[in-house]
Image (cartoon, rainbow, N blue to C red; front, side, top):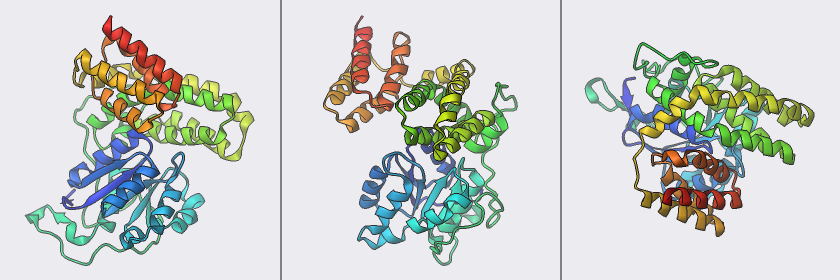
Length: 369
């Protein structure tokens, strides 16, 4: 890696927190100014406030997907909104979505899970040349600005540009853990470093219960579109940690969802959920390690944020709920609240109003006891 772009501003849009974290981490060596958006609505708001040089847009998101978000962006009156390069992040086969992405106004695509090599190539292609700083001699590369041709490439995963191979960071140590169902080499390749992969294992552990419950609820309520969005995202997340077999199972269920094959979904989902939950014990140490690295907040801070969260949910102020939850996730979880915290994460993720308020109240009582 022999370039950076410290003056370039980039927006990453993805409803999956892990995807946001990994993509931002892969961009970190380029020293770019990176903003994150977890929804199409937030992306449009940020793009209206700030002029980005590049936007990475997840194709498949709930409520407003990447295609619709890009269409709305392109319809805004500001000329910048019509020309800023938008790169689709897609885990779908390109043959299925190429025309849809082009018609939406997307300029290029990256296959998910995103690999460092493809990401760096994409940055070099679309960031204005005047913003590229070559590390050899520290001189800015002079030349025309990046092309906005709107043409989709045949592949986003091969080759090199200007001598930049973008292989990502190597493993931080020689001894990698041997985990059932997980290939460390794949995980490190997709996340960019051993350190990020190990953190991602802990992040994956944290979401297992909430995602399992979400899949169960979708099947029980016949919400096949929501189910398809969930397994689509989990397919990518599982592959990023190196769990290829689990990822393939999610992929099969995604195809069933798109085909409306409710019978197969109902038949296979219990086994899929059991398989997903089987990773809890394997990954528990990494979840606990992530928690140990967080700040130990005083009880008063916990109670303050839990009270804010509970009251905001009663008013159905979801932005405030999300803000309080994000603050809580910065704290090391007290042992007495560990089970309740997992329940709270799941309830907030599923927007279960009564459950959120009940669990938050229970945690306040646990902390005061």
